[in-house]
Amino acid sequence: MIQYDMFPLIKDILAMEPPGNNLVIRGWVRTKRDMKNLVFVEVNDGSCFNSIQCTFDGIPVPPDLSTGSAVEISGSLVFSPAQGQAVEIAAASIKVIGDAPAEEKNGIPPYPLQKKRHSLEFLREMPQLRGRTNTLAAVMRVRSRLSYAVHRFFQERGYHYLHTPVITGNDAEGAGSMFRVTTLNPSLADPGKNDYSKDFFGRETFLTVSGQLEAEAYAAALSRVYTFGPTFRAENSNTARHLAEFWMIEPETAFFRLPENMALAEDFLKYCFKTVLDECAEDMAFFDERIEKGLIGVIKSVAESAFVHITYTDAIKELEKVQNTKTFEYKPSWGCDLQSEHERFLTEELFMGPVIVTDYPKEIKAFYMKQNDDGKTVRAMDVLVPRLGEIIGGSEREENLERLEKRMTESGMNTERYSWYLDLRRYGSFPHSGFGLGFERLTQYVTGMANIRDVIPYPRAAGQLY
Ligand code: 4AD
Ligand code: MG
Image (tube, rainbow, N blue to C red; front, side):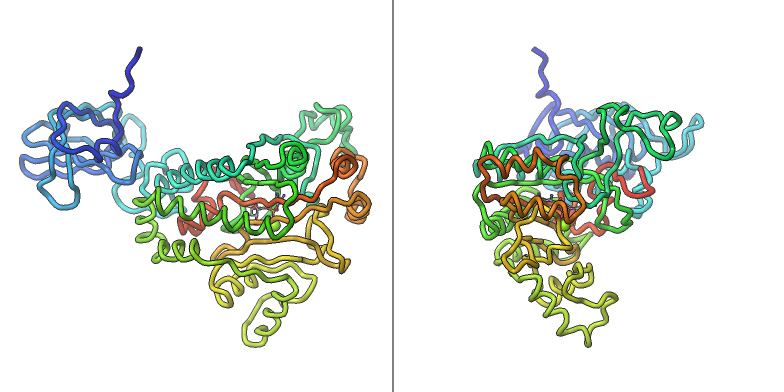
């Protein structure tokens, strides 16, 4: 048996009680400081926020050892005599595994991440290296922990994890902003009218915008399901909260109506907030200090207070009340979608916290939402939060076959194409509800990161494939 516990992580070493002999540290050099006979090398392996200080007392260190180099250091764990860390490594030897020259060498440009601070824009141009910075590493650790929390939350509540397809023939949101998937050779395709019957699947196919419709089918089989996977939107919105490829969590619950769905969404968000506070304390302290002052306090208080509920109609009334004193770019009026300035007013000024807006006009929401008896609105729910606006979108689903079919036809959809979906209303139809949480927006919210491109390892956005 090959032993792998010979490779302790820095996180584990930092948690040990000195003295600890014959330890081996492996990671990348963050800094090196020379003081007469003493050399201090800080090594980080990304296992936790902190680096470990290795002190070389009369032990030779390669003079050109530079930031970014991969090293292996042997030594013992001792109490640190200096301030700033409880323990450190009294180093006995160092081996450079892979250097990262600070100056051009053999035609290779210098390592771009020198000790100084770099802007997030600069770092975005090098997704292959930016994970080695404090900020991006902290974001990715939090992202990983949140993913785990998502599974924990739903698994503990009787939900089954459902893998919905990435390639699909459905436009789940009926919004038309889909990426086409084809193997047709463009030069063979008739420029006027492509013959998709000759395409790989014999019909038009796309990357999914949502796994909801497929999840609904399985909610009718397993009662409680959730998806957690990549979704794709070819929207040309170049904002700090839109990506062309993002991850979405979509629970779908049999027999839930809108109130239960809202309660689940609120409970789920709070669970995620508590998870990062309890399990990512070091990284959160960094975000609170360097990215968004007061972040921890805000998340704590949000995790402990009830979300405000308001109908779309009442939200519009509130916006109309202040439109003379506030300068909105878009005039709020019943029937128009809430703009991000309206969402910000509701969450940041009026209610100062998360708000769940319900019962939107049917024209501005997707075809599958349950229609209210007023004939004008649907049982939709959007969860809005300060800074970001919409973080969750969901609804109770229309379970009545005739009403759903009528709505699809009105929306210009081909009901034959969606006959499989209508089957769910033909055979054992049932009230059910669900929602979608944008995973990057959640990560943005808890880390305070301003731009969504900095909370996913390899961002994809209109015009940008980093
Ligand atoms: O409101 P949306 O479009 O809802 C759905 O897709 C439903 N099928 C969900 C459901 O009921 N099962 O998207 C849900 C969430 C949004 O609230 C937002 O957080 C996120 O997905 N989102 C995006 N995140 C990043 N970039 C984009 N382009 C996004 N579009 C939506
Ligand atoms: Mg939405």
